[in-house]
Length: 201
Image 1 (cartoon, rainbow, N blue to C red):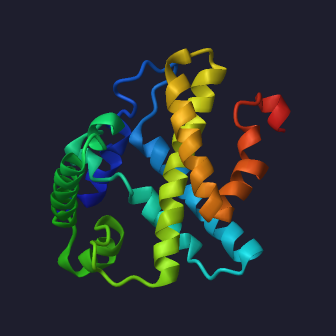
Image 2: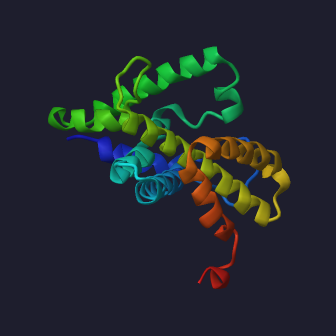
């Protein structure tokens, strides 16, 4: 009996934004789906508009599993996780150990395929330029998902996410300078978030 997928299904019990008062809770499964779809979209934009050769399906899979280790570690608040380089390094080691534990829940013949998704590349690992760029887009998708949550909370009248929105938008603006796919997504798709269903349709 292998419990990998039963364990992954528990992402729905991990709540995000633990230190923030939300009008609607967001769980890790919801966030992972959103990151996967945005990462896929960013790669498609890159391929269609900028002549790149990015594997959009791989980006979607990386997005889907990008926070899977939080089933074991829990969601560490961003201000804590990035407080210092020492904390970030230590948390990276915890994430790597958690990924190893998840991989141990798979049959041995399947592990290699999931290692490529669950274990992030380490410094010094050789990555193609295309893979390195793709991973940057997945990280940008994660930031875009956070910004979307801030927009939704603000539109619901919750001022709790005001400063998070400002800092996340600033990060995305700086990413947009290097990643035109992010700029295009923000221009073409971001304004629709927060509209009513009738307005969307």
